[in-house]
Image 1 (cartoon, rainbow, N blue to C red):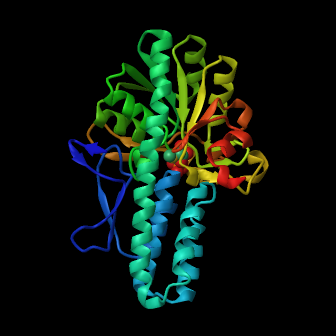
Image 2 (tube, rainbow, N blue to C red; image 1 turned 90 degrees about the vertical axis):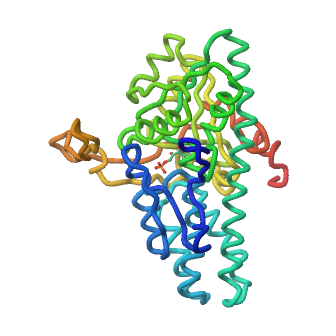
Length: 361
Ligand code: MRU
């Protein structure tokens, strides 16, 4: 995707030295666009844990490059196992993280220590390229839903999204936002309702920034506004991303997604989920009981960071109490209209997923 005309990905190898890893510091957005240089595996782990990078596909790709950095320091089997386990433990909910590290281990365990660095960079590069291609394909399969909504309503289409599932959350394009970018490129008249996504405000800070830089019409709303807008026919469809989908179609995503799905169901608003197949956990059937939900610091709820009128970035406290902070929730498959994957759209069900991924039967 482009920032002010310059094409970027969300993670890339520095072309000058050919090995260090570049990312945007997403904790600084939307107020500053800062590029970080990662040179050690500990920095990659910190970037994921502190959410300098976040979003399921992106943390998978950054973890893969983290393995590359680890091997530059020590290519022994013991270090490979230790550093991979350390990276895998940085965040619990998004399955892409575990998937990417397992894929790296599969090619690296049989390699000799002398070959491992080259093998690792090649595999991490493939993971990144494949994610970008998969997200572009999600866009192609999802844009048809937006085009159909135009045909149905004969007016501007209003899409509601939650959290950030745009190109900042993936290597490129995004998942939920890929169809929106493609609809915009096609000249389809659309507008996006952007949930602010408390407590970390990925919608207000990241999705609004992405859409704004691209020129896509959008409005940030309080997380509590979606149900009201749906009751008044101001939402034609909901598209969200996901951190893990069970083989039965349950969807883990940023906290608050479930409430949007309930409101959409009550108002007969289609509720779609965009995902690359790397987000499917084929080992899990019951999302509510089996998917680990990350508990983050209560400080993310009690404290809010923003820019003052004179341009300083300040953090203020908004409650006298402490807070609980479950970071994800699970939307049961019965509330999901369908899934948009790189292979096409399907029902959120075991049969639906197997129709697109028959090799998993
Ligand atoms: O805590 P985050 O910001 O990593 O959570 C991200 C989300 O919940 C996204 O909606 C999800 O990863 C889909 S990203 C394509």
